Length: 243
Image 1 (cartoon, rainbow, N blue to C red):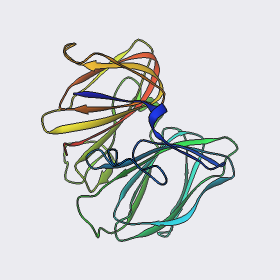
Image 2 (cartoon, helix red, strand yellow; image 1 turned 180 degrees about the horizontal axis):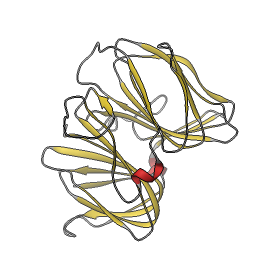
Image 3 (cartoon, one colour; image 1 turned 180 degrees about the vertical axis):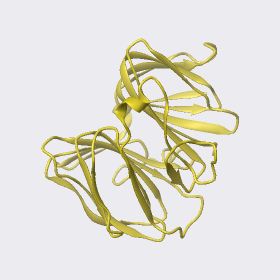
Image 4 (cartoon, helix red, strand yellow; image 1 turned 30 degrees about the horizontal axis):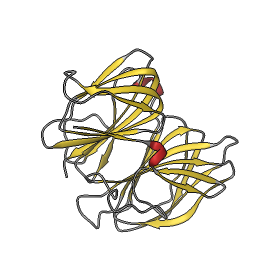
């Protein structure tokens, strides 16, 4: 099953220095029918002006992935980490028993990044941090494994999270196609970060093709899909147990 998520109908947050699209209920945006998708609790598509950002604040019992689209993201935390990441790079923080952190745009251009929060499979984990400076070319015309469950011994993804989830990124050129399999008992949330694409069942039957533009998303449940880039397309997919 495929379900289209129109970015124009998402929750929004406007704070002068920050412009956000909320894929799920967050902050002042509350929709009781759109709290989460399985273990996926938050995807915020944030635009942060230069010289601003999220000052130090706490988190606990959440797996947090930040995916940089454009600009510079500078992270600092109570574990002593301080790093700056750029386009296509990823940071991970397991908040566990509690951690304080900040995220700022100390660059000269607007920062765009995706905040992705995943509910863990348990509470009270020891806090942890990691950042991964993936070569952008590593996702061109293929799915680049970014994150996976700590129990998954078969994945090459460097980020290990406390939940049965797999995250991938891809960049496909105009006219190219790429498949993604979502098996029985599984579901996935796909975000078209940049570009324009069509998504349909891999066998070409059943559901009509979905046309996605920048910031749109699709829920995919127990169905293999084929994606065709109408324009150069940059994507991220969070695949997980159904629920």
